[in-house]
Structures are given as structure tokens and as C-alpha cells.
Image (cartoon, rainbow, N blue to C red):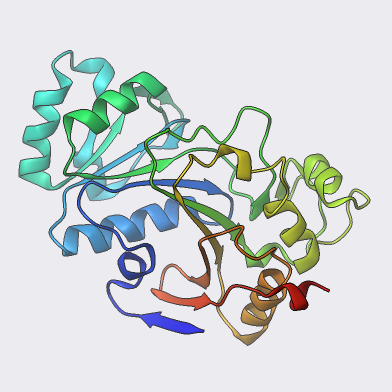
Length: 265
């Protein structure tokens, strides 16, 4: 196991470089990880485009000045270039939907954005979870752009021990079906592993050749880290490029070795 605990922990974890495209999916901290990546990337002097292929909560506070709605700007590409020069970071969405939500970009526009700004690091939220700690994807999600070269599947360790119900899990009926358990069973490391590794869940949506990262968030104490190890030892070898668990806010993240076939028996 390798411990990363620095101001650039997630840059090191993902190996981010200029021009990278990072797709975030799952539940348990996409917005927090997006904010952490923005912080680390800007500190490293890299231009950052933050966007979504679905809806995104409106940035608040001083981040509001970084918001750019392409629906209001016909000549958006040149204006985004200038915004990046001035601010280094741009939240790029389609339009304001009201009630604190912003509409994400259509697939064709995401591709145009990538081509227009090849040096910027793009961080893309690709599904929603209604602020739950765990979820299973619906049939039409995640909406992962084909140019994504790093895919981060997030699952919240704070869901373990909680019932598989609407209060704690997004789409609990799909979680129960994929894991082959009764509805409202309490979440366990085994259930979590079954869902994230299921061939009809997230795996088919990863673009060919993309780095596949399974990140278990909210690993804040030894019990959480024990749960992470129990999840990882049930993941078939080679299914993910990288297995990691950490606390996004503090920047503490641990990289775990791939399980061997013996540990699955």
C-alpha cells in the first residue's frame, strides 16, 4: 500500500498532465473531488475546465465569477480562452435551470470544447446521485465523453452499514438486483464490490484505453480503511487500473495493491 498525503495527492494519484480529461461518476463525493482537483490543478499552474454531461450544482461564493454559460455566448470558444487566461479556471455549463442547478453540455459540445482547448485539464461530472453515498447507474448513465482518458468511479464508505433504501442509496432497487440481495439489506463491503464490479453497471461505459480508477471516499479512520480493504479484495484482478481510498477534504489517499485470484476464493 502506498500513502499519498500532500497538497498534490490527487494529481499524483491520477497522474494528471496538461490536456487530460477526467470523468467522475458514482456517489459519495463527486463535487468534493471536483473541487479538490481544481485546487490542486490551479496550484500547479494548469488551466482547468470544470463541466458536466448532466446537471451540476451552481458554484457558490467566489467561484461564481468562474461560471460561464455557453447558451448566453455565441462566440463562446474565444471567450473561454480569455477567461482561462484571466482566471485559470472556468466552470462551463449550458444554462441556468433555476433552484441552484445548471444544465450540462451535450456530447457534441463537449467534444468541441475538448478540441478548442487541448491544453486545459477537463474535469467532467457524468452522472447524478442526489447527494447519496452510494448508487447504481441507470440505463442511460453515466454519460462519459469518448475522449475521457481517466475515469474515476467513486463510492462512499459511509454507506456501509446503512440500509439499501432511498434515504441512503440512489436507485436502491438496482443496487439490490445487481448484488443479488433483498431490498433494504444493509450495505456491506461485499455488496459494494459486487455492484462496482458488475459487468452491467459502470464497466461498459468506460471508453477503451481509459485509466479505470475505483476511489472509495470518506476513509477517515481505521474502520473505514478496513472496509476499503474488504471491498478491494473482492474486486477481480485487472478490472480497475487503480484502487484507492481516502479522505478527499484532507488530501489523504492510499493506493492499494491489486487483489490476486487467491484472495477472491
